[in-house]
Length: 297
Image 1 (cartoon, rainbow, N blue to C red):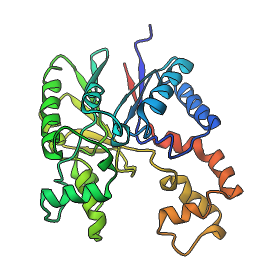
Image 2: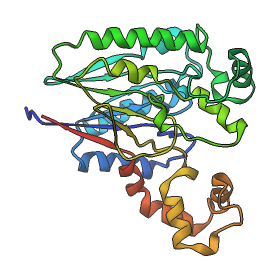
Image 3: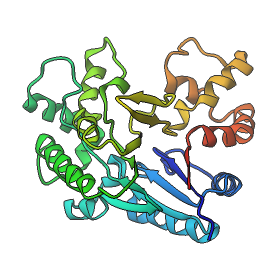
Image 4: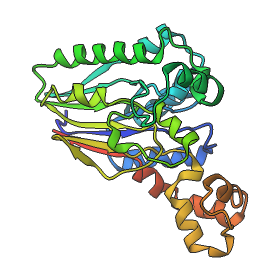
């Protein structure tokens, strides 16, 4: 057996919303094989149908490639799941020699919201405007995060013999990755992105080297904070992809007055033959830019 293994992590795949065709999913599979990935992990938001779409795809992908395929839940994956089902899919540990790979979903406690707003008002805002109104947790968001943090601390405390720990989660573990906005309505959504509590817990364990997360649909270069390297490279929705910018740069005649509006500019080209050809030829690069890879000996 080869001692060297390659772990790949990708988040926010959204296979249903992005309407991946069989050839596009086949391309993703070929990329994994070419990169010699031995373990692929989805860090949440694979689809909006966990049992109907996500699980069958993960099983099929593993069977067709021979790659170990695992996942942790994101908020989109939790739709339709009970609290027991959510917990049953949380906190997994995989070993690569003396390296432990820990995955869990995370949650949020409103602490990323800069403005002052009561918990009750934020809960009402969530029920009316936010996607997670479709998710029914057993506890409120504050207590849910508190419970998860305690579980996280307990899990990490049990890994005393791990020389290195790599963590995968879905929600945002540090405020440095929050995008500030002057628009109050959009700023409210920061409340539902994550919590610094996770970073504070990670800091207690010096053998944690890397943390990979998503949810924010914005790709960052790896960033070291207090000795931990954070990786955020979510694939996100098609209209957010980096190739959309490249398309408009290559074909400026397709630009619209509201180029600042990501959805509008994408909707203006999504059925154009030039875009469809461009997507086909640039999708490999998009997939690769959303993969975080670890060579583990």
